[in-house]
Image (cartoon, rainbow, N blue to C red; front, side, top):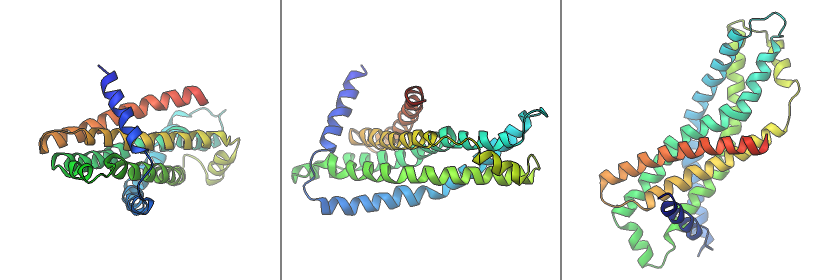
Length: 244
């Protein structure tokens, strides 16, 4: 039944957002998690974004064979695709594999080695102490990673388009600056924040309720990535349907 795990997930979130005992301890953990999630993921996001922009530009130029369509349309398509879909969604799926598996395995290992039980015996709110800093750090840093991804995606498209002579530099600049709708960026940030919450909360849930040994930790990590990706894509459709 889907309602049983959903109820456990909601109850876990309720415990996570309970008033912290000492914010000083949480503040240090939040900074550490921001470095781990944000700085640690910057390299892979940068590489993927540059190549996504390059491939999108080349393939769009290949499909626009009509002389009646200005080449600047390629820049417009790349800009809107990067903001609305490529950067937030692809980055979230990649981070679900990197960050989500790390969160699930970390918390799952603490569960099977009874470290979480020790925290609860000491009277510490273990869901809040272990999960809340990760959620706050992800919701803060992943939107910044998405903004960087958008810039690198457009930059990759610029280099690929001009190098392959699919369009001129002036055509590309005209395309990315013409008829820009700022609301698309708002939709992008909404997606980034919701996806960040999904990645950390779902992965933490899978890790927190791990039982058994090392084998089960691996299974929880894999399950966290799969469920996070499916939830991200489902949320992507719902957000697009509601906001666009």
